[in-house]
Length: 468
Ligand code: SAH
Image 1 (cartoon, rainbow, N blue to C red):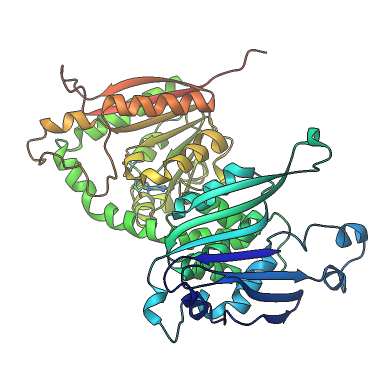
Image 2 (image 1 turned 180 degrees about the horizontal axis):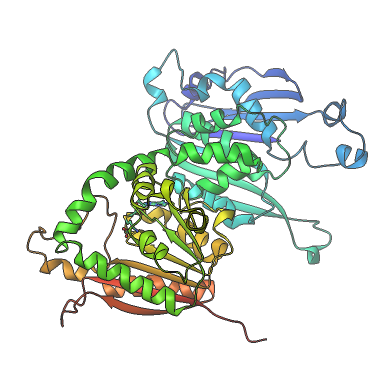
C-alpha cells in the first residue's frame, strides 16, 4: 500500500520539515499490523515527493482472531489497499504534521501550498468513481481516477472496485492528512481495525473544520463509524448541534417579525388551513409535520379527528418545547396523547421513525435549509420516509415587492437561506418529483396579484402508482 505526497512549493524539500521526516533518509517504523516505511523518491528544490509504504503483515493480523473464516482472513485485499490501517499509520508516523506542528517553519503549517496526493489503490465498493468524487471534490480537490480491471486477461469481467486516486489542491498539508485520515476508512467497507467508543471524538475532532458543511456528512459519519448505531446517533446529534443552535435563536425572535411583515397571522393561518385541506382530501390518517416549529399546524391536526397519528419533528429543541406547551401535551387525556408524538431530529438525516406515514407537511421550512443540504433533505423525505402525499410551502419571492416594510433584496426572515420565485420553486419541485416517482401540482396561498402572484406557494406531491 503506497501513499505519495508531492509538492512544487519552493523550496520543495521543506515538505520534509512539514512531515518531520528527513528527505535524505529511509525510515521504518514497526506498527501493530506491520511496517511503515517512509522515503522520498524525489527531493529537489523544485519538486519533492514523500512516500509512505505500508507493509501489512496479514498473518499477524489473523492471530488471536476467530478462525471460522480462516481462508478469507488470509486471502484478502488488506495488504494492498488503503484502509483504516493507513489512517492509523498516518496518525502514528505523521502525527505532528496531522496535528499541525512544525518547529522550524510554523507559518508553513497554515500556508496553502500546491500538493498532489496519490493513493496507489483505493477500494470504492459502494458507489465507485462517483462516490470517490463526491467525497473529495467538495473539499476542493481535483480528483483524477484510474480504474483497474478485475483481471486484464479477462476484460469481459469488467472493472474491479479498485482505483488509483490522484488528488490535487493548493491547501495546507495538515488538512490533506486530516481528510485522508477520515475518508480512507469511509471508503473501505471492511470492518474497522480500531473502532472504539472514542471514535466519535476522533471523527468530530478531525472533522472539526469541514465535516459539518460537507454535503455527504451523513454518509461519512455512517461509514466512518461502521454503522454502529449508538455511535452514529451521538455523532449526528453533535454535528447538528450548530444547526439546532441557529434554529433555536431563530425560533425565539424572528417568527414574530415574519408574522408582522406578512400582515399578522392571517397569511400563516391561510397557509395552515390550505395544508389541512389538502391533507384531509388525500385521506391521510398518519401525518408528519416536518419542521413543526412551535406547533401551530400540530394543534389544527390534533383538533381534526381524521388524523389518527401525528408526528411533529423539529431540529430546534426550543421550538419543540413551545409546541409541547401550546398543545398542553402534559395535560392531554391519554387517548389524545397517544395520537401525537414530538421528535427532536433533523430533516437532513435519514430517520427510520419517519417511515410508514401517509402524508407529510413541510410548512415554511425548506427556505431555512442550507442549499447544500437540500439534496440530503430530498432523499430523507422522498426516498426514505416516502409518504404517499407531501405538501411543501415556501414564500413566493416575487411577492416581496408588495411588502412595504421589507427593503428590496432582503428576505422575509433573517434565517431564510433563499427565497424562490414561482418558477424556481416549480423547477425544483418538478425535478424532485420526476426523480422520486411523484406527481406534483401547485397551489397559491393568499390573495393572488396579477403580476407577482400570491404571497406564498404550495406544492402537493402524490406518489405515482406503478401500473402493474
Ligand atoms: N412549520 C412551522 C415552522 C416554520 S419555521 C410553521 O409553519 O409554523 C421553520 C422551522 O423549521 C423551524 O422550527 C426550524 O427549527 C425548523 N428547521 C430548520 N431546519 C431544520 C432541519 N434541518 N430539520 C428539522 N427542522 C428544521
